Length: 162
Image 1: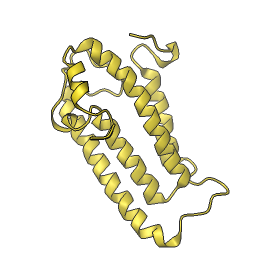
Image 2 (image 1 turned 90 degrees about the horizontal axis):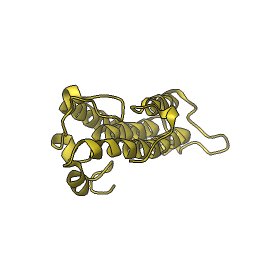
Image 3 (image 1 turned 135 degrees about the horizontal axis):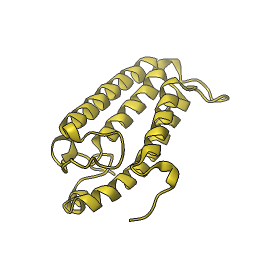
């Protein structure tokens, strides 16, 4: 297993701090890039409706996944010492459904507020979750012998795609 930078913490605490910063930027940071035109007026309602749908679906997925984990839930990428491998429910759809749900909600928020920069924050969050999940999966592979087979049959973040 490869070593990771010391500043990310022994159990991945640095990932949680970086995630908090990205989520704060997504929710409260600037929404538009200077020099880019605003979204067309005709797109207001369709974008907001799509945003609400994505927000609702994302929050539902993340909540269902968190409930499925139960006591094993932790914000850290390092699994809890007393956890078990969960591969059912939302975890049969993607290996990291909480991240997937947060991403759906993030892109939904970007559509709802029609923020070009907000969508860029959501895209950055996608890249971040891909990196964080690599570290998490290294720990899961070391902890659970069945994780390799699970990893082969279930996509990482986007059902049926990636």
